Length: 174
Image 1 (cartoon, rainbow, N blue to C red):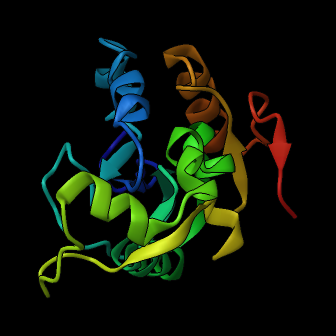
Image 2: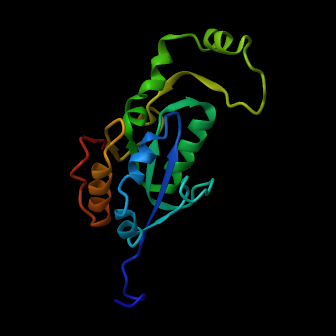
Image 3: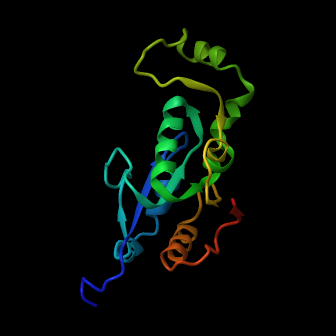
């Protein structure tokens, strides 16, 4: 097939918010299938590209919940630029392990950890609780797991590339 007649590659962006980066590691566990995947997608913002801002994309994969103002800002930019937004993993879907702090007072917690509440304009403002991403923006799909398996990522992306409703999605947001 000539380059003129080749199907357009989908632009995919990924981001890790308040999480452990395990979902990105699981994504990388598709191993040699990455070479096949790269025939169908181009990465935009992602730790794989080191691009720090998101441009117009077909698919945005969001790992992690929201624990500070910077997470919210990044997520809103993602939603504005991604045609399809996917909550990936337990932290993005429910707040995950970081949400275990939700019953604690943030000021008391910072005092206990640092000895005093940090007051540095470089530090993002912490939220009073950790939020799943659907509480702030509309999401189109959720890929559950802690983390989702490499095979779940693979099948999910294959479905999206083929224009099918993903079969691995157990949660659908309409």
